[in-house]
Image (cartoon, rainbow, N blue to C red; front, side):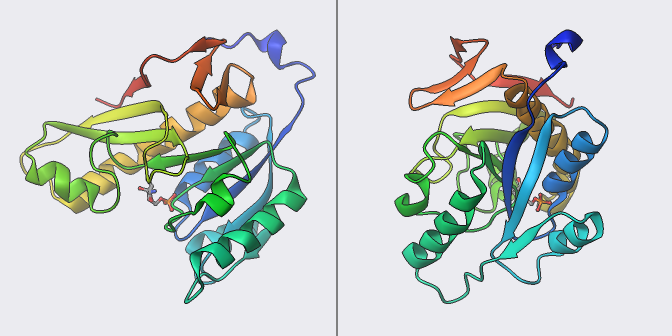
Length: 224
Ligand code: GRF
């Protein structure tokens, strides 16, 4: 989509909080878009539920503020309350789940209505939850992909905003699919965040809107 550059003038910088659990490659993709001045967004805070998340090392190197809330052995609602407390203080415009491997309860979701998005490595509504690539292979699917969706109380079940498709080849394994999908995920997530940052895309309880038109189906990108 063409974004009128004049629209970008005097654009207010929106604040995001990013939640990670591991590598944080989607976070890095968003960060690089910001640094190349293609995204009027500030990463206010990165929160990890694991102190050994590799993505934290990247944040330290780039001087991005981080916060660890260890989820190990913690009741879900207690962890989520801590998360709400820390994130509320940031007053973010959007909360981005990027490889955040923790099921969230309504304690968290209800605190930030229509403000949380996630990326999931399947063409939702197919293959919610884990082992998405193996499930696509087992079903002998010809294509797979990733979806960015609004987070609600149903696991991977919120309104699907956008998807990117890649082919599945005969010799693919779950590992090769994950490897080939990852760069496509980066394109997809940065694309969605960019549309949102420029006020082209917004969300409410009813769904996602592109230029104030309710999306009837997810935006489609192709990496084929
Ligand atoms: C990605 O495949 C993402 O879709 C999933 O977790 C994986 C890890 O991503 N939710 P990242 O490298 O930590 O961003």
